[in-house]
Length: 142
Image (cartoon, rainbow, N blue to C red):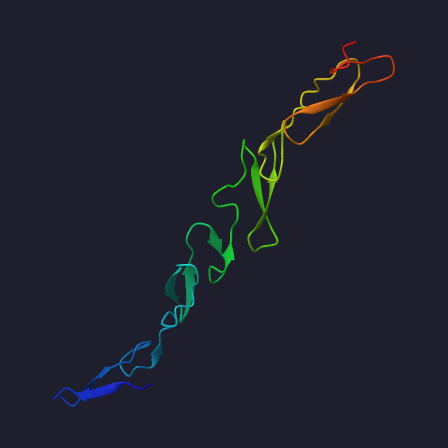
C-alpha cells in the first residue's frame, strides 16, 4: 500500500505507512483517513469500520442530517417536531398561540366574544367577533 519498509539490522524491518494506512506491513486501512463524517462529526475506528459521533443538531450515520429542532426554533413553549428528515420542522403550539413558530398570541383563546359570539383571529394578535342574531358590539355585548 505504498509503505516504505526499512531493515532494522536484526533481520526484521519497520514500515513507514502512507496516510490512511497502518499495521506492521501497512495492511490496515484507516477508514477515518478520508474524513467520512460531515458537519464536524468525529470519526471513530470501530471493528474494522468506523462510526461518526455527531455534534449537537446533526444525526445520521455520517452526520448528514440536520436536526432543525436543535436549538428549538419554537417560541412561547412550543414543541418542535422534525419533518422530512432534512432540516424541516413543525411547531406544536400550546393553547393560546399560533404561527409557524408559535410567535403569535391567539386572541380568541379564551373566547372574548360574549353571548355566543364566534371569535375570528385576524393573525396580528387581534380578533373580530361574529355576533349571533340579536346581539351587536365589538364583543357582542349589546
